[in-house]
Image 1 (cartoon, rainbow, N blue to C red):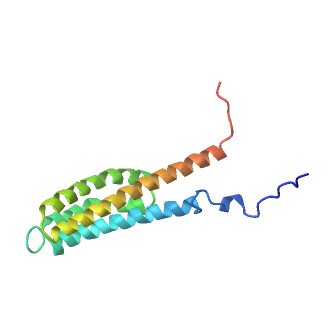
Image 2 (image 1 turned 45 degrees about the vertical axis):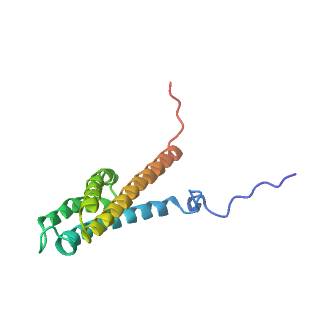
Image 3 (image 1 turned 120 degrees about the horizontal axis):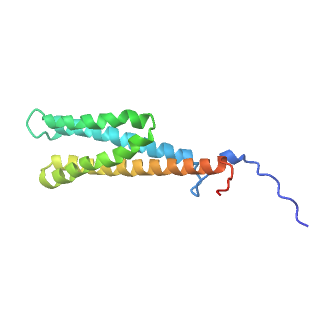
Length: 153
């Protein structure tokens, strides 16, 4: 006869939820940190690029104001608002396009700033998508496990 299985010494809430072995919460925090970090990087890059590193006009240009729209979603990302992650993933393509155009047309050091802008945009986009996807999956899993089974008639 087989002995009955004993309960696991690890409580179910602390078991890893992903095959990688890390709790889902850790992946959500990593994607959030990447999104906030890359957004802050884009803000700083925009200011440094247009005021110091390679301004269009000597002494700085009004194009530094392009950093202002990036400041708007910062509060939403810091407050972990799902809607903000969604629309930032679309807004970032405007900055990506600017980076591609200026990487092609500008001379050094402007084109290096543009390449960095492209990289930061891609990181921000992937981080936002990952964050939304993980949170939706967690919400779906929590909804399925907490909701009682009902039959539709």
